[in-house]
Structures are given as structure tokens and as C-alpha cells.
Image (cartoon, rainbow over all chains, first blue to last red; front, top):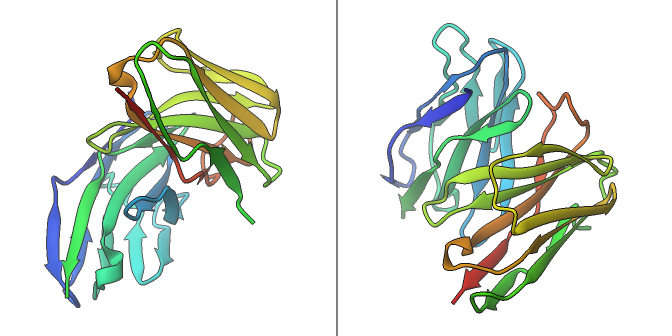
Length: 109
Length: 116
């Protein structure tokens, strides 16, 4: 079946450090790919998405590129802030939305 | 204006009780969902309705029964609550039904259920 694999966490960074969160997927068709973010005590918010190969999603300084050849959708940010501390979920969508396990990011001042 | 709203946000109840969580969306979407997030933050779909019709029903105990009185509402009723039902339950909605790939799913803020 369809699945999403995220790198193991948690991740702790200092403010202004570079961030990369790896995400790879397995799917029977051509899915759309998403990153959702969950801030402490809140629900999930869409961070960015890409609907076809080579598309780049971007929002709030975060970027991810849909790489069909490596079946990946890694999340990157050049300079993280304390306010980026949250749980990040990679997900794919075909007939339904399938999430990865999520990774907790903590950013120190 | 809250797009997807669910109530209650927090619910503490005893084992064996029956409880409901209500959800409403004002986005005009056709499809609504219930997701469960366990203590390890893992998210899994439970149900999906498209225009009041059930289209996804994952392996969920029969004690869980969704009800959709209209396409803007999807309530979750849970009978005979068990300790393992403690989780965060998220309601969500999206524009289209059966072909949701590419359509953004919008989530509510979650309902924290604790069974004691």
C-alpha cells in the first residue's frame, strides 16, 4: 500500500541553523505531496504542497521539491526560528491522505 | 471565521461511557473526514464522507459511528469508551470527493479525548 517514511526525530537546532527533514514515499500511482505542521496544542495546518513531479512548494521560508526519480519530498529551510518549533508531517494523497509518523522540531534561542 | 470547527476541544470521561464529538465546516466542501492521532503523534484516517455518503471506512471498531446529517457536518459517536480510545481526534474537510489527490485537506483544531 501507499506509505510515507520520515526521518527519525526529534530534531533540535539552534536559531538560524539550516533545516532539512527527509521524506520519501511509496505509492501505486502519482500522488500529490504535502507537508503539514502542528504547533503545540493546535491542529494541523497545511505548510506547503506539490501536485506533480518537479513542482516546488514553498511557504514561510520552507521549501520542498517533488522528486519523482527519488520518490522524495524533503522539507528545507535556510534559517529556522524559535517559532518554527512544531511537529512536521509529510503526507501523500491518492484516494486518501496518508501521513508519515511526524517529526518534532525544537529550535533553541 | 473558523473553517473547520469541532467541539468539545477537551473531553475527560470514564470507561464505558458514550460520547460524541461534533464537527462543522463552513468552507462549502463536499468531503469530510475523521482522523485519530495517538500518543506518538501518528495520524490515521478513520472515516470519510462525501455529500453524506460514506466512502472510506478504515478498520475501526464498531463502537465508533460517524453521522453526517448534511455535507457541512460530520459527527463522531463513540460507544462504550475504552482506555485505548484516548487520543486526539481531528475533523477535516476538502473540496472534492472521490478524487482528492491534490486537493488540500483542512483540519479542525482537534478534540483531546481522555478516558479514565
